[in-house]
Image (cartoon, rainbow, N blue to C red; front, side, top):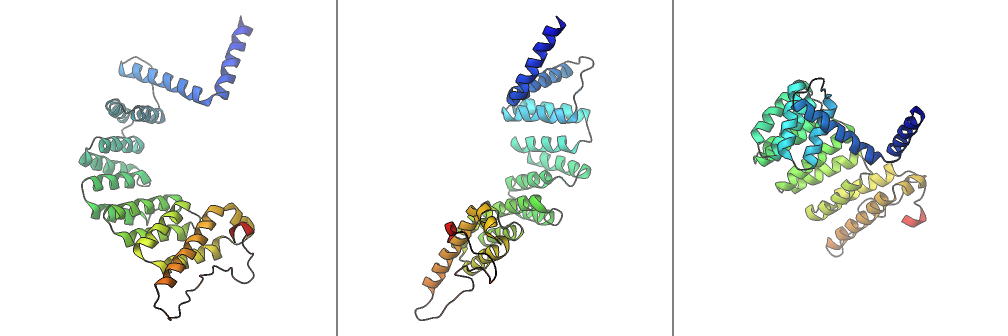
Length: 276
């Protein structure tokens, strides 16, 4: 019997390893059972902080916000100093349009963990919902001083969206430019700045930016091949902007903006033939 039982357990384990979705579903089923036991006051029912987050996300994903709010309240009762659970509660308050309550909760969470980027994104959402654009902008601009890398880029995209909502189009361009100065291969920023170049007419700045990306970022054939999509966007849009500038000049006026031909600097490898 023992050998047979072990064989069954091994087969179940192998099946779960080969089917991670099934494993996650089974784990969630067990977690929800333990959570129900805890709600019913059964002894020895214990749920870790991270498990509470999973339960809240489960109810949120299934659009059962009432259950999600109940779960986050119970979780905070168990872990009153958890910034992560407070942030999840604030998110749910925003989802149910309780914006002032969300902001108060985020202030609490910031005292516990001021380095969580979600604090600033959720505060921005609440301020915008309350039509307080100035506060949203000030918040994000201050946050940019304290974050770097991917998180700073995420905040810049967030700030660009705020400016978009309030039709401050030149500032959108500025945000995208900062993103590309930090991450020249960011395809989302490359795509968007092309549109806003046309919209704002900041053609010469766009040319210089694209030329700099080509000169500094893609220094050899391998880099160009790896970043082919971004590289192609740089070439196509810089050429398009250059043509627009040239066409807009008065007849007979000499105009040769730097870098229009997008030639590599002397000594740098040429582009692969597919991009010439």
